[in-house]
Length: 135
Image 1 (cartoon, rainbow, N blue to C red):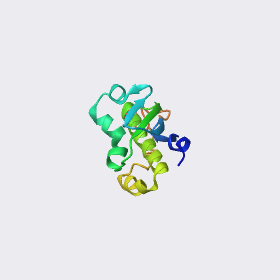
Image 2: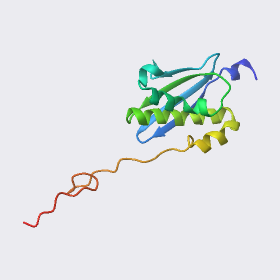
Image 3: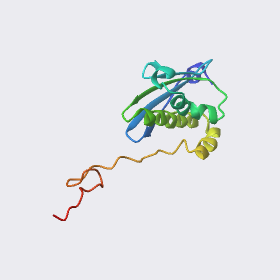
Image 4: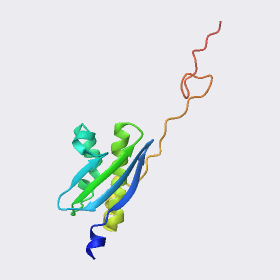
């Protein structure tokens, strides 16, 4: 590989509910995460959300180190973390086909398309009807 192709980034989009994450990985000497121009521990405050976002690298048994840059928008904070994991998984598969099996078994390559059902007229919520009264 030439140095130009070695240092090129790989980009993929990850989605969950209404959250969308554009993930770029670039080969580096140590792994670092930047999410919306913030460090991962600043953007995802809880430990749980940080592990969800980084799961693709840790459980995917990836030996290389990357600089991960993410632009995420929409949805809630948890959906955003899962969208980052989905996008990161896609970039890792694009980089190396060997990790596809592992990530597929863990369910990281599957897009969770469940959406909130819209509210219908005459109802209080999507399916909840007003209390029926005889008189």
